[in-house]
Figure 1 (cartoon, rainbow, N blue to C red):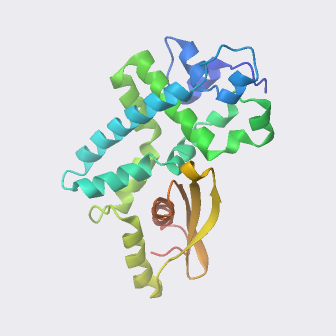
Figure 2 (tube, helix red, strand yellow):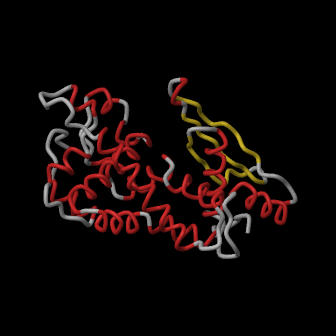
Length: 241
């Protein structure tokens, strides 16, 4: 792959959105390491778009959750939104869209598998959301977000079909007790990042089998995401249901 050249038509086909201003998409997929290692003008990376995309994503997801869960309280809605817009969830969506294939990275990030990093993938997705918002407006951004996150929303509806569950750990514990008469076991897999921006990866096991993994800014957030993944995998063979 030519890391300096994007085949924008291919990216737009995968995203399902055609940009009026393709340069917005190019910027959204440009990591700061690429800008720093090229002749590209300063500021032409995706950090500013990432900032805007985070806000747009939070608003659209919040509005949608209020609509589909009319009886949920503020605490339940906040927890669920946090999981849906977490780094772990967004990285999964970005992987499904194959954004890693199109990222423009500097040599250092390229050499350290930057295309697979959850942080870079999640940030790129937020930047793309902002690019769609600037290019097409709020309605286009909303349509794009609800479409690319539709598998996550579908899984959420399946998990909560018996009533809204904002606390995935509690839900998983209830099911684990019913099936195995034991509590889920959470384990720290990895801790990374500087002190002011730690990232934690946790895994949850039930009956000596790993059922889910999660990445978050705190151990509790990562545990909740791991519990949600365990619930999403609940219909698989030999699952907890």
